[in-house]
Image (cartoon, rainbow over all chains, first blue to last red; front, side):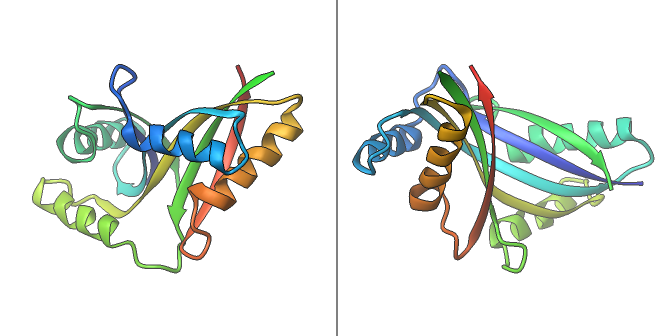
Length: 83
Length: 83
């Protein structure tokens, strides 16, 4: 079966997010001071071939841990959809 | 009212995504050849103060168009949640 994974990798809440801070500042200059607390991470989509949803889940989790997210600075979450 | 927006900014499907291509290649070396077609974009969360959900939607759309997404190379979509 083929699955599609939608993964979000975000900087940990406890850490500063300098890119997000800079964008929050720019919102003010753009005339959008109502926008606050911008945080910027990665959104990753991928396709995976697996026998079952559980097996796909294990593999995507492995990919996140080994390559996609740096768990010291980032947290991740994902959803799987059958294609 | 306070809303939280969850925004995904992705490279357009018609364009090459070199970062995604590189990660797809690395999956093979990691022992995960089942993973294909990795695409990497940005995930952005922000908080916005607005009178109504419609007004928040308009403002987040403006922020995406003016700052968060480059519409020549990227597409965006977002969801709004009441905080």
